[in-house]
Amino acid sequence: MNVRLRPELERFVEEKVRAGEYASTEEVVEAGIARLMVDPTPPLDEETLAAVEEGEAQGDRGEVRLWEELKAELLAKYVRK
Image (cartoon, rainbow, N blue to C red; front, side):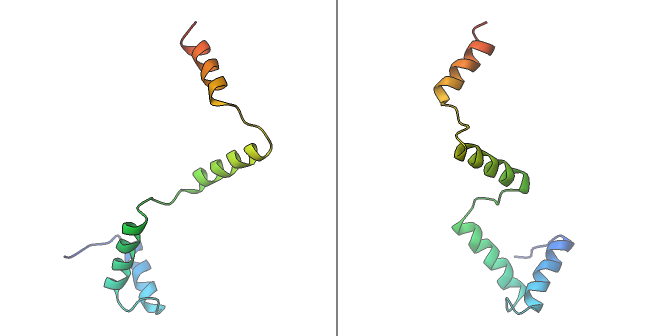
């Protein structure tokens, strides 16, 4: 199998080999695929991580609403006019 990588990914792979972290470019690619097999969930971006942290902080401060209350409010506002 031949794989063509974008230039920035190719540089990353080559840096890992040069740094001695991997013996070859094939080993870097295999490690990445093996990781996807173990944990197929893509990493969260910075904006999503910040939103999760803010939600946790709100929960810690007691700024939460029960789903049933919110659901009733939304139904009254948007469905049952």
